[in-house]
Length: 239
Image 1 (cartoon, rainbow, N blue to C red):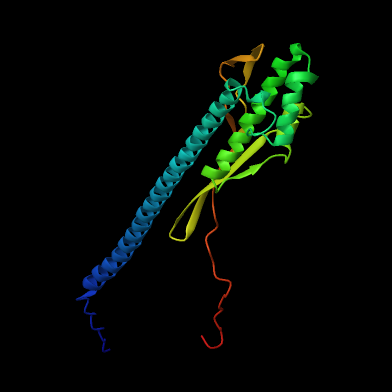
Image 2 (image 1 turned 180 degrees about the vertical axis):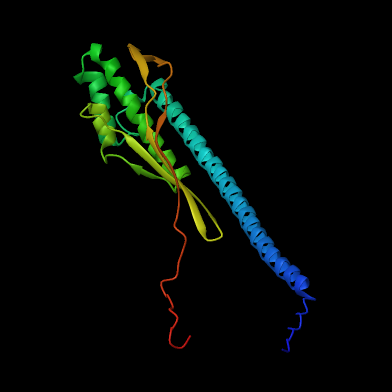
């Protein structure tokens, strides 16, 4: 009986193929890890730039608040001058509208009893302060918006209702097509004075801790990223 022997397979080069395959696999893993690392680095840099931009934006917002405080300080100084110059004894020609100024004059000279005139002057001073504040804000901060009653000065002087002024401003910064914003809402307040009237002379004491404004809103937000509404779908038959 004749036996046939199978020719042994030549295994030369098999180890080389295995090494090449391992190198390819390791290279792919390396590229994947490198891509993920680069993406993380870019994301970290983007987050850092985003945070820096918001810090810069907050600095601009703080400068706007400081500018408002300076305006309100000037308004307070002018309200004090109104009292020191005894303009409440003028019939017209003051910062108040002539009809309202005439009403103040009549109340301070004829209509009100002397015991009530000091308290009345405190409301007059507040009205003068608010009027100057509104006028100066509209001049120096034209981008801001103000919300208040059209006859707010009469409301304050006649003590008909609590009347306030709300200051609104949006500070924005646009970088790479994305706009970041800070909405600021501030309620303007009269710091308050205790006035004493002796004859026609007025003396006053400012309330301790009186603030000219109160921040009621501070909102940071970013507009949504833009996108294209023209969406193209691939044709599965052709592609």
